[in-house]
Amino acid sequence: MFYTLVRKDLLLELRTKEIIIPMFAFGLAIIMIFSLSFNASQEINHVFSPGLLWIIILFISSLGLNRMFALEKEFDAFTLTLAAPIDRGIIFLSKAISGTILLLIAEIMIIPPFIIFMNLTIPSDWHIMILILLIGDLGIMAIGTIVSGLSMRAKLSEMLLPILFFPLVSPHIIACVKATNYWFKGLSFINWQAWIYLMLSFALVFFLLGFMIFEYITEE
Amino acid sequence: MYTINNIYKSFFHRTILEDITFKVEQGDMIALLGKNGIGKSTLLRILGKISQPDKGTILYNDANIYKEKAIIRKGILYLGHDVGLYPSLSALDNLKFACSIHGQRVKDTSIVSTLNQLGLSNRINDQIKIFSKGMLQGLKYALADLIDWEILFFDEPFSSLDLKGRKTAQGHIDKWIGNSKTMIFATHDPEWSLSYCSRLLLLDNRKLLFDQSTNEIDIKKIIKILR
Image (cartoon, rainbow over all chains, first blue to last red; front, side):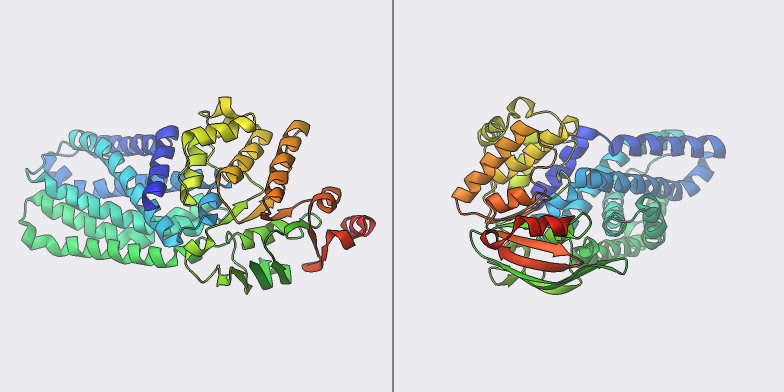
């Protein structure tokens, strides 16, 4: 059932292209603004870029979450899933995982221009950054799916989402920025692994929380 | 089969449903009547577990649908007033997905054949957002044909259908009656309700005004209440 739900979300994106392309376009626009307005040396860019990268990821994830749940509201389509004999926790997991997949795809498209425009030199152990991105995205989407589920039936859901989402996700984003910063500086993993564990804890706590409370979140 | 006990529901401190209690037996075909905004759709949404009651219990085959695992709701099909399908997916994708989340694997040929009966087989791969309202209503009948349900909650079964569509829809309902299926329809049509349904529930002023067999009901009385 989980696979069916994830497949449906990905199929919806394949048909509409309403999530990844706006995320990419928005992300690219922010990169351009950052790059042109700062016009800083490579050293300064190196200091600020972890924070800038996660701000971009935060903004595009908010946009993606908004669209993902808007697609469920059209034609009252979400009732089809809600009325089916599926535990709401599974619905939450599928939404959070499909959101993570879509966010990862958007990041794959955004990170190369970010590196080019910010004039960055990437450390050779880039696979660690993939791990940071993956755990970071899982946490963002777990929190984002809970908040989107809460706000989707509200009148001003587009406004409510960032108002609730940004404060809740900020400790996780700070951990993501710290981890990215230490990786960027080329410090040994052992010196900053605590940040990864903190990110993992956030993701795990919010996945469990979402799994348990999505039943109540989605009720009318 | 379905036991509804003391259901209460309010929105923004306004009570919509108060102390709704009735039982649904196997093979019952029930019409749920009432004026606009009286709570028919809300009651169907509660029965389909889309909406949660403030108080009361709903038992399906003696299991509480709000407390037990979701799998006990297998066999319940809810078709709401809105389309309840994904506008950006094709008719085929929507029906395949709907069947699969109801635990059924359906072959594409079965879907084509069902859509053919409803005159929609040539639009199978079109995104349903370009369908007319009548065609979208037809998709609900296709869904009800493909899923092996035990009890159906259908809000406004003839909404947006032209004469031909209504005849086809009635053909489906007749088939379900022939198979002794259990159904609850929210409708505004007392004549149709008395002709086809075995029981009639009338909602008025937040409460279930009466629950009677259609053989015992005087249509004039119903129309007077509905005015």
